[in-house]
Image 1 (cartoon, rainbow, N blue to C red):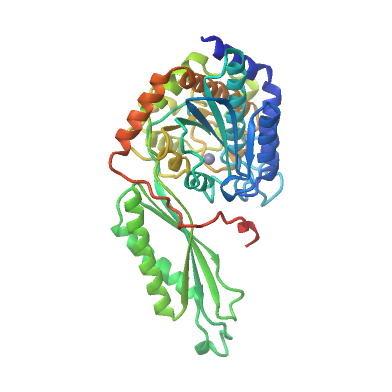
Image 2 (spheres, rainbow, N blue to C red):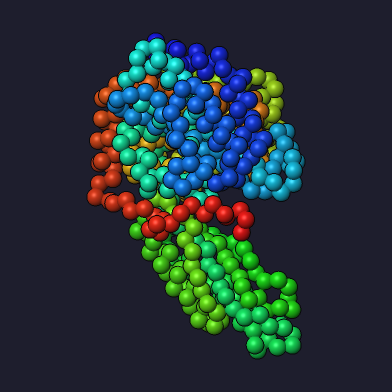
Length: 475
Ligand SMILES: [Zn+2]
């Protein structure tokens, strides 16, 4: 192990308790996207304390920031996320019980995501301080991954220009740097405006905006037969009127449309717009469409994925205490075996069958899944269109744990989550040190990135001039 890595890992070990405290604090405050004021301040403050130059409020978001240290080239970025999910409040116990009913919770483990990258950045700085800086380490504080895709604004505003490689760590059920891509997405709200009238006394004078919402949904549900296999369309009805005796003058739906390639998602989305126009025409209501967010599909990078796997193996997987294994076993009881089989099978990871009877992933496979898609989306994708990027996973949650669940929240602030935090911080620090000290890896990652992009073009998926919707939680 190199002297730099020894210093970096030593710093992480020595500061373990403090790092866990930070992650747990972010878990407790559980702030929603774009209003992660305490969480971002906590991480930015820590980086500042360790001598990083911190630029706050970047790309029009008060909770976005960039912290840098070092000089020269290359520039290596690490990603931090810290937003929670609405309605997922949960105690750190292995049965479903909210801390505060209806409040947000860290159902995607972003308390760990933010802290592991921060720890890695500081640890790398400690190592470079000793041996002399050979490049710049940048921590990107990225708000609102779950809803408004903060990174898309940061990419659009040039914050990832001149960065040579980017690493992100996401808590997961496996130890993996997969080569699977993700789905590109459009998130849009459909507002319909009708006319209120007494639904019993004067229905002929009313124009129902809710009818338009319903007819649009019917049209879209028929469209499903004619979209490609990997496409996904889902919606909610956000406003449907006041009470049954008033013809609803206003109604609103919120749609996500996903497909692997950008042009595929745009094709389906355009068709959906036609359906919405049709619904407005049928009901004699007015339609307003509002694009809320858009993201691309991930461009994987084998060079970076292999670097992560190499570091995971060099460091060695965490060992779990009896207490941690008991917690995992309790959680496992709440997960049906079939759900576990489906989840593992979908990864198509070699040897997934052996994992079905295990509690936690206990190996590090070679990167897998090139040419395949996971059916979710992430704004890490937009970074990956600008810079060679890898987002890797470490076992935080019992195998089979569904995403965005109470089980995720609970496991993200107990021993299981803490082990994942410390392990992933070391992996990220180790890989960053390799990138800062071996120019060959950076060059190879860049070549591969160029090859994979080919003649595809990146055009920001959000409307020109649009600003992050900072008032969204007041709506
Ligand atoms: Zn997430």
